[in-house]
Length: 458
Image 1 (cartoon, one colour):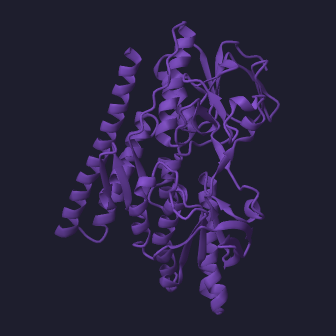
Image 2 (cartoon, rainbow, N blue to C red; image 1 turned 30 degrees about the vertical axis):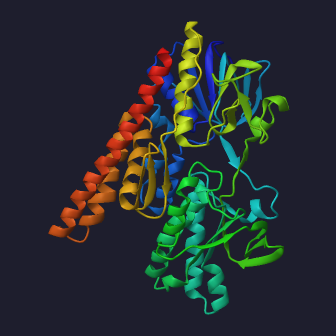
Image 3 (cartoon, rainbow, N blue to C red; image 1 turned 180 degrees about the vertical axis):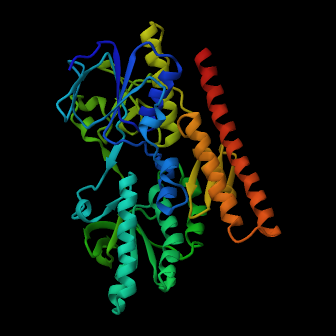
């Protein structure tokens, strides 16, 4: 197919790719922009736990790209990229179509890493996209239904045991969420909620080791024991095999078996195959195979190509694979693309880490604000969701999602049993907390913006 030569192609509609496109639209970028993603919906991954648990709906967490990009001038193409020809500046789709580009943005993120563990890819359940949340939901309901109807205690225990592999933030957040709502599901089926088990298995002796959230370890460990059912932790355990009805691991030189029909895999990520297949030499990759980029987020050998998010690492300045990093890199790439088109100088990307957020169960989270204050419990939950809602793309979607969140999360939750004085007062208190959460988020983003502007002027 024929395309104009002056166009920018963005591969991947995650935080980096989508926000690059939206920032280009706001900057009235003088070249056409094409965003390619195999999925029709953007997935706001930090809030995927809320979608999974029913705390938020699909409109809030997985909006359509066509809705987010309406009126932006960005062309959205739902397709799978088969290969990238860096020499000829072409992107080839599995459909046979081909797009030429003057500039390319690689924002494909990463994929689930199974690390050659036997049976993991076939039998473990990943938690990465909306379809994964739906698959786990269906699987768990089937297990609970089967447990209700079995008279064999051993089989019932196996059906009611859920193993979460990986003690990083994803594993901690998943385990905490499951330990709160699974017992309620089972009790609603007239089952004994105390029979439900959630087991967190981690290779290291510490959860959150080496993660940006590591300073929240003690808080997390305490909160994991305060869920509807306490979470069992098996630490220092190397998972060696995943079977349909069991998990095998090694600990202290011994092989042990955990009987379970449910293994949820959050043990790490791997480099995206598209990135692996690029003709980039090893000296321009990190040890995980990710692309090393310059401070301006360009490939050293192909300056017309920008990369950000989980698939890239800035030379000598690795950053955590978080939403706030990808969000800021998207803005930086857009600024440099506009500078390229106008013939201006490019500027190094400035990323500011302003605290961390960790979900620790239903209506519970830990929020580290500007590395100065740690807030936990329900207020931490409100700040966490308020912060992420402020990051939602496009003002219209942000307003709709925030309005629905305040209504569903607070007003309906506390007024459902009747408009008593006590519940009314509690609802008002929480609306105030929600406003605090949103205002804190806005202040955080304002500070990020002000610092980026200051660095641009220097």
